[in-house]
Image (cartoon, rainbow, N blue to C red; front, side, top):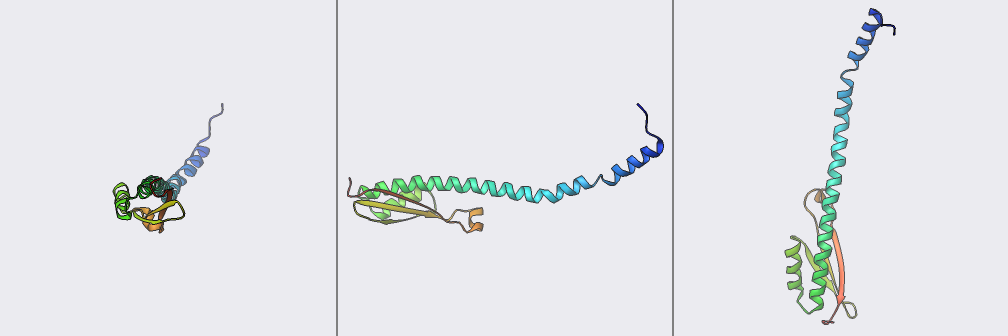
Length: 126
């Protein structure tokens, strides 16, 4: 295997030393984008968890309204399960429908997202 001449070695050293900082610069340029994607993913998971809790609590509130509890009692039940959530209800024929909504904290506020869940139950204690 032939060895490199001293001139070739110097040329190779100049090339690698001039490119030494480029990897660091590329890393620094890409890091904010990677962090932003990570934050968006974490915020999405947080929103999904809020949505699941809200849907479950709204279903409980709809069943409570269907058993004859007042809107205030069912709203208290919802607020206990999901702090900061509000409840409204409508009463189509033979049904009681509860609508829960919340504006989540964290990145959800920055995105202007309001989560809503709707659930219906049989009315009049049926």
